[in-house]
Amino acid sequence: MRPAAVASALLLGLAALALAGPFEDLVARFEREKGKPYADRIKTVQAIADLGTEQAVAFLAKVIADDKDRTLQLNTIHSLARIPLRSAFDTLIAQWRDGPEDNRGTVFHALCWNREEELPRDIVEEVLGGKDQSSRSNLIRYLGRRGDPRFLKEAERFLAEFPNGASSLVSVLVQILKPESARLLVRVYDDGRNYDRERVPEAFAAAGEAVLAVLFEVIEKDAADMAGTAAVIAGRAKLAMAEPAVLDRLAKANPKLRVVLIETLGAIGAKSGAAKDALLAALGEKDEAVVAAAIRALRGVPVKAAIPRLIDLLDKGSRDIRVEAQVTLERMTGQQFGERIDLWRKWWKHYGGGFRPEDVKPPDPDALDQAQVNLAIDKGAEALKRIRGEKEPWVYASHRTGTTALVILALHAAGTDLKDRSMRAGLTYVLKAPVPDRTYETALVAMALEAIDRKKFKRRILECGRRLVETQLESGMWGYPTGNGDHSNTQYAVLGLRAAARSGMKVPQRVWRSVLLSFYRTRCKDGGWPYVPSPTAASSSSMTAAGVTCLMCEAGNPATAERTVIVHAAAEATT
Image (cartoon, rainbow, N blue to C red; front, side):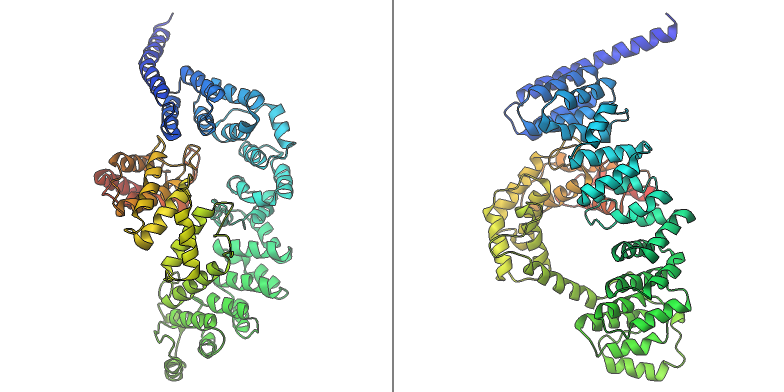
């Protein structure tokens, strides 16, 4: 045997001996934890998976086959999928073929998201011919990532059968944006549940002429909803080249689409004289929504002829129109006369002749005027009160307690009195319901009750805090609580624990330390964070905001030194 081969064999043998001890210790710990909360056992399972050995694969396979705790089974499947050994992949395939029917969806999700191996053809064909939405969605992502020619055809068929599954396709489409897939990307953009939605305008902003030609064609010729969606994408991507297509469609659009197209002109800057004339003409239309859109679009667009028309609108229309006109006047002119129509008229009379809007350095166009903020808050609170049923709390996807907690938190922030009928009903429901099992809901209950009265509701807040401590994963993150964890659930858990800490709970330092270190480990190269950590995941603004929130959370003064180091490192990477 060659010396290099002898050295390799010795190293492998020493590594196996080194891992034998930790494996035996973890197995013994797992046995001791039987009968304890599943969160403890999940942490041990993940620690065994992190060893990455054949022993670990065999043990986890036995857990999946023998343990009666379904939550533990599902988490073990995800943990097994992260072991980079062929035997782990083969074990998952065997679970798909011969394991419990109820576990197949989780197994397939783990195969598609955590493995690089090619799936067996018979499994691919079975899933494509099936009606399980989750598995079909996971398989389509798999096809897209591998450049499979069936991707677009299967994506179209998937949307036809599952219209509510659009959000699952965006992350793949933005990575393989081509003329033949551009229309499909526009089609799936509008799903508000989509975590990757913000990446769509970025993808089009960097796209070539052939892709943009498809986007502009959608604006000019497609059905109103598709055209409006494409216009929104063009506006958010700041595609000035879209202006001719927008103006062409504007001339023949219905009021609903006109609103979108006018706002798009404002977003891309209304560069041409024809675009500015279109905005001025819209100020005189009868449809109030169109007028409001034109007022908003004029912010940052130097059109002197708009100023006297905006001043007139301060005395006309609804509160919405008056507020919109006031904000636009202030941004366009740099003057701060508020609602004083007399001062606006006087100023225009004396200075309007020589006034040049383009010479004014306006305030930040992204800043919100307080009048706008107050109006939006009032309208939002009233809308929330209207949608509550007489006998049911607020509910989204069967999550009654968490949704109701979120609503009463919003109503409280909006200044709603606790004696208000809707607030009383929501608060009563949250206090009577059991502490939720899911991370989002548990955290929201703690956050809402702490914001309203941390002393009065201390007992329930601390119950939520203890539940969050119990369900933290070995990685330092939180899941649903199943799975390997994500930054969205983790953000809510941290905010819920902060509410508990403010209410008197002593959150263990190990919890805070684990959170901080998990965010350090899962950063992307650009300094941000993705929804689910993985070597190929791209950061998003929403999840980066979640990361910064968690790092800067001061509840219980968690691990100050570590937090400072990580925040500085993230700032340097982002810069």
